[in-house]
Amino acid sequence: MHETASVAELTEALIACPSVTPAAGLVFDCLEAQLAPLGFAVHRAVSGEAPDGPVENLFAIRHGPPGSRHFAFAGHVDVVPPGEGWTSAPFAPERRGELLYGRGAVDMKGAIAAMVEAAREIPAEAGTLSFVITGDEEGPAKYGTLALIDHMRAVAAVPDLCLVGEPTSVARLGDTVKIGRRGSLNAWLDVAGQEGHVAYPHLADNPVPRLVALLAELDALALDQGTDWFQPSNLEITDIAVGNPATNVIPPRASARISIRFNDRHTGASLTELVTATADRHGATARCIVSGEAFLTPPGAFSDLVVAAVEAETGHKPELSTTGGTSDARFLKALCPVIEFGLCNATMHKRDEAVALADLEALARIYRRIAAAALAG
Image (tube, rainbow, N blue to C red; front, side):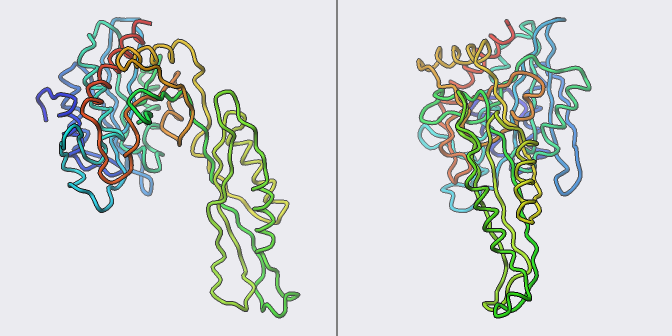
């Protein structure tokens, strides 16, 4: 689609490009075809190798006058697999009544289309505007936004403010704005023992009781009581495995997995140290992977202008929140203050994902207000 498209038409065009993570090729062609005529210089690059790559990413920038402010829209064009049971084909967008159906409608091709529509209404002399679009947010994200950040730093194109178009709204468009997210840590716990006959336990070393004791100690931890902006950190046991098909054999090994979602009273490093030390006391090993640190963009000028833009279009003042899972804002916060705001999330990752056509139009107007205010300083 090379001609100018409305926000709904561009959403349809993006949905029609199958882009199960990692996205590549056609969906980026579609987006580039809309941005280039608006004066954006479009940089596309492929990063990484298997198993977590290669990943295609796009950075587009339209420079304003020298010394002007730089505002960035950020998001992803990859989607989760559609699964079975759709009423209509997931990558054949279909309007039914006031809704547009298709995988990615709300997470987050609709938001990206709204960003393009907003950019169309903002004159170049207003300031520097950019798009930070990855093809891998729903997957490992190892070569997605992180690679884009490296590129932005290399070409001295670090924005002053950034808005991520994640679907943050809950009951209606504009009810929730995300100013932070909790961090995420996963840990794999392993206890080695010695197999043997259950009738001769003195000749064996059962690892299961030690694993149970370790998990009990971890489960009993009260990591914190929450903060002014974050709910309490929580540790959850997500898997226990022994793999013992016999009833009369003490197993040689037992393992488990835990997941911690943590607020800004902790870091990935501090929790890794806590889990590892606890495992050591029970004769276990722990392998920890931190997929994101907690972050907060404190309420202030940026959140004020986002709230004002939402309220001006919807008539309702949004709630500032840090709930939910992780997003690529966890990486972008290293560049500049970052806030997330987008469509209603009720159908994201579900069959028959759908967006209200009126919400697409309203979101484009909100994004235009946000970008204009951010560039004005």
